[in-house]
Length: 180
Image 1 (cartoon, rainbow, N blue to C red):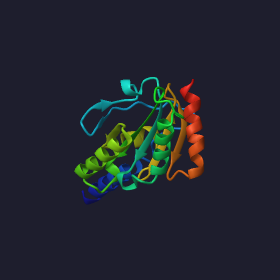
Image 2 (image 1 turned 180 degrees about the horizontal axis):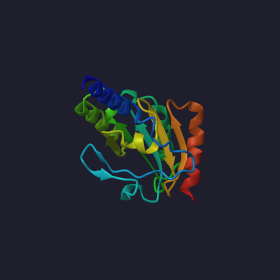
Image 3 (image 1 turned 120 degrees about the horizontal axis):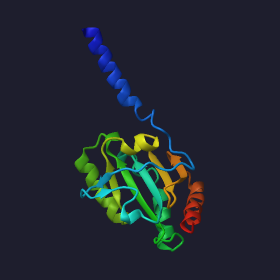
């Protein structure tokens, strides 16, 4: 009985830690699987939400402990949109916060989310159970960026800290697919 119980516990631990590693990885040219997530006010969103329809999407999937890792990219995309380099009619950037990856309590993360939401004037969704990590095979405990065209085909994916030198390429990819 003790051996069976131990095996069950070990199998559960293995499954929990490996589930993200076993996720199908979203690659360039793949159609992104849809999701249903809420923002901090409880509003439901999916890739088909009205706010995202007909737009190229840049989606940051972020562990709250790594929230500033790619802030330089968020700032550059916001600046490009503010200057009209990226057309907000055909482009939308937003973030998804990986709540399960952090030690911080949800109420604290939600306060941080509200601050970022106000700063970037955008949607920030809450992922309580690795939904996106499992759907798209992104990196846990990190910051990831995915760019999807209007048909939800992956045109760019980066896991981890994005080098400054990548920013012009990201902007160019978004501009290219705005007009398609």
